[in-house]
Length: 150
View 1 (cartoon, rainbow, N blue to C red):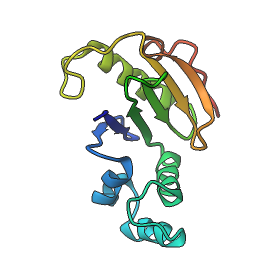
View 2 (view 1 turned 30 degrees about the vertical axis):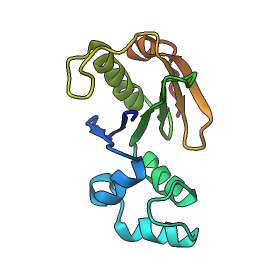
View 3 (view 1 turned 90 degrees about the vertical axis):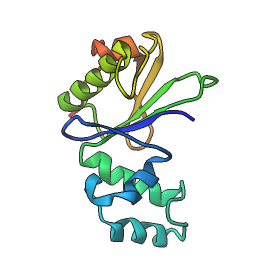
View 4 (view 1 turned 90 degrees about the horizontal axis):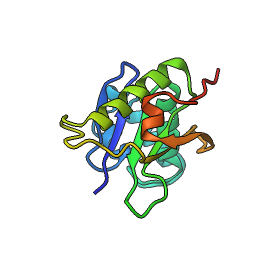
């Protein structure tokens, strides 16, 4: 099982035990959405609650627009180890991503018991999955060439 997280607008790392949408459905108010909104989006697309389809995308986009960051570790066979999704690369987003990468590289925490490899590839994408930045975990920790969008 790969690791997954949200980073809250306040910078808190929120572990995701299974899928991002399942975490949101389990505690919608924590993520700034309502159960009614989630159910309405799933009904609109005629998708089962919690499915990985269009409704999920809309719910996650609403959260990204509210400054949440979504992170998923990919299996070792993938060319990119860390997928990061956010609305835009603002100074606030960049600072939270930098902290995430520094914590991962350092290790010794509940979420990163062992240090992560500094050369782990990272891709940062917007809500439409367009690439905003590619680099390494070390580059993200140093905010190396990580642009800011307005």
